[in-house]
Amino acid sequence: MTIGIGGWGSRRKPMSLIREILRSDLKDLTIVSYGGPDVGLLCAAGKVKKLIYGFVSLDSIPLEPHFRKARQSGAIEVVELDEGMLQWGLYAAALRLPFLPTRAGLGSDVLKYNPELKLVKSPYEDGEELVAVPALHLDVALIHMNRADAAGNGQFLGPDPYFDDLYCGAATRRFMSCEKIVPTKDLLLEGSLHTLKIHRMLIDGVIEAPGGAHFTECPPDYGRDEAFQKQYALAARDPDAWKDFVAQYLSLNSEAEYQEAVRKNR
Amino acid sequence: MSDFTRAEVCVAACADCYRGDGEKLASAFGTIPMIGAKLARSTFEPDLVMTDGIASTLANVLPVSSGPDGKAPPEPVVDGWFPFRTIFDVLWSGQRHVIMIASQIDRFGNQNFACIGDYRKPKAQLLGMRGAPGNTISHTTSYWIPNHSRNTFVEKVDVVSGVGYDRARALGEASTRHHEVRRVVSNLAVFDFGGADQSMRLVSLHPGVSIDEVVEATGFELEVADSVPETRGPNEQELVLIRDVLDPGKARDNEVKA
Image (cartoon, rainbow over all chains, first blue to last red; front, side):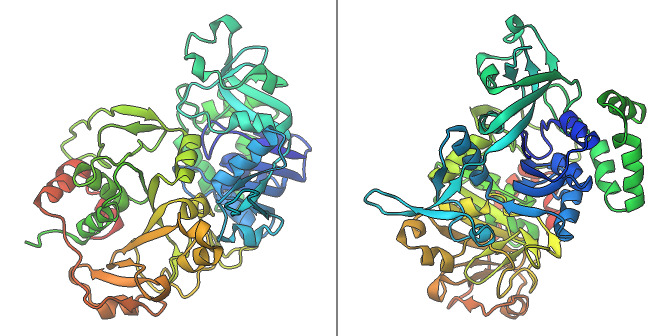
């Protein structure tokens, strides 16, 4: 199964949905992401077969330690794209196009290590050779928003929509968690019309998950939990420490228990 | 007067990379390039466009660090919305000049910060390709290398994330017209690509650094310009800006020892 995960790095990631995947028996996943701890956690849990990504970073900690481990042990198959190419692949899928052309990737080792990427020649007078970024079709898209209504209209209240609408456009099934479900008539109380980036046409299921982006940031509702993120990154250094971290936060029965464990140890 | 530090020379050298750019988006990674870009914007390139590092462009210049006096930094004056998708649009349009960091760079300006060793099972996974392939083929790029050594200036980079002149040339005119690796600034010297076949050339030495020292620390045969002046230090006005306005907390000294 191919799962696309919205957000960016350690920002507004649908972490409660990721934790649900960790509790499930899903495996051999293909993950598409501008990755952060979503990718790190899924790699650490051995859920990832193939990773299609623009980067994987924790932002304030530039290198994602669990992703690094997976890469350095050769545990996962990777398709690493230029950041803009990943957007293009999602956009192509969302527009039902087989590919979109770009210069990005030309001359770099992106093409060397992804030999399935093809070039395309402009049919116009310029005859320019460009990279044809293939559509990135997703089985499932997962995103996290600040607000939503029960019909699946989603609202971002932070500074950046990232590419969440494109993930949804590229996917067959689209699921959105949000900090708070509000009545439709209240959707404009906290943000302007322009913050209603996710339309219900893009969404199949919505769930209220307060703190659902933890420990990534979800402004203006909350910032990144830097202390927790540090603890997460440190635990990656040592298998015993990681086992403790998993016992304390991840091998729990529900999101509610996770949130409780985070609260207790604050 | 030479009453400035090596870090401050590096800041001025990074600022000089932006000379002549006008109304372009100036992006900079690393502390010293960031101060450099702000210095250029505050002096000889007032039209440069800069973001707050999140999703806005700012009409004013904010410091990279706060001083010991605890003076509150100026309030940001937002003049534009620049989420990531807009940054991508702008960079593909060519209206940007980025200073990126290179973990490795070769004589033609091919850059690697993706990983060290075999790509399929790297010895060290670094940042990854990130935006480097798209940046380098779309607009002007310069590089900052805080630790000039044979490990960073290499004969051949392990992975090409940023495209150098030999590879751009091989793609033909359609690609070379958007490709420019302008300068490399290291903690020792400044380089351009005015050498044979657009190879790297030493153009100035930071005060107190010798040609031999640079050649010794470089893992490929380096072209040396006919005359190699000393890299200029910041002038009085620039020094005041660096010390009192842009970096009163001396974050620059953490990147290059004074």
